[in-house]
Image (cartoon, rainbow, N blue to C red; front, side, top):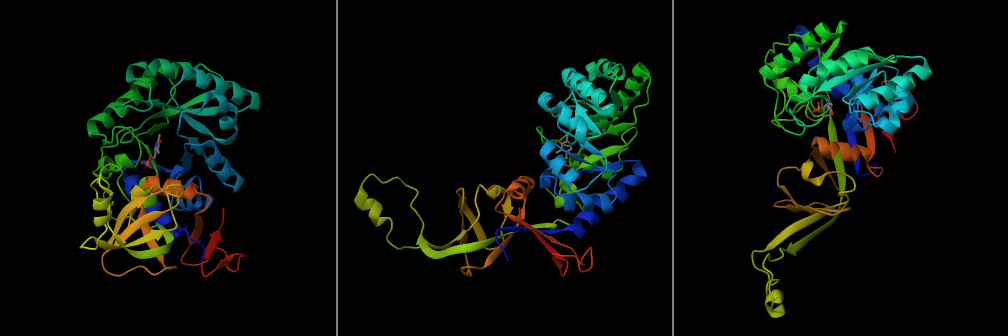
Length: 373
Ligand SMILES: *Cc1c(COP(=O)(O)O)cnc(C)c1O
């Protein structure tokens, strides 16, 4: 089979989605599946919907286009503030978008009017992460502006935590967001339907029992895909952490002397440093590099030590069993390693299901479908 490749278990993605959907349901919180970590991979997106996600969200237009092209008709939310230059295309492909800039909202509205539709707006509020958001004191004015602009509909408000500031939200912050929903309604009149409280970083708050109050939606990517909490890095109980596996092929294994870290000015001394001592190690090279993934975000098998990476090579050290040329190594990926590998043209994506989704479908055998990009 071709290497490098990512093995994707769609059942595990569906299970993870379902598990979170069920656990958040008693709190009145729905799940929007975030697909940016897999570049809008349609199979993964469908697995999220099968697991009960009410819709999908992505940060890039190209990813949304890919899902639409694959026939996905569910609501899609653009979670990055749209580029002014893409307003027309956003309105064409996404039912809703997260917004913080009145000039962008005006352009979305004009584009929606031209198409004879209404585009839904989620106003993002800055709650301490330091990335996107309207300052809370400016929210009412922004909301009034949206309600008075034909072509756009105020669908709700939202916040984001744990991205730039790497801190999980407190229940106090969530209570503030709830009260902002009440305030917005008081000032603008229309019901604020969606209060999207955050991302996977909010799960420790939500799964601890909230209280959810007005928060009725979370936009979840990492927890569904990797089963981990992005703030602590710990696995979330009940979720699969092995839905994705990266496989790479070993192209060199040699016993090599460790380079001496000292810079020796005398060439004779430098030569001496290569004299065998206890500096010998077994090193292998994987045909995978910075162009394919984020090597710092890989978890290697036990007894394999990451040494370094260049654009096309990853060098590892093994302590007991030397790696055979042509053999494959399996690695777990962090969110950044996954996102880069999903985008890399030389990394093929192989979908695994416990049973074929379509019996006897072309390209599907033993529940395995290979997609080459
Ligand atoms: C990426 C992103 C999410 C999803 O974050 P995860 O940590 O993957 O759950 C949610 N909302 C916004 C605005 C994002 O940019």
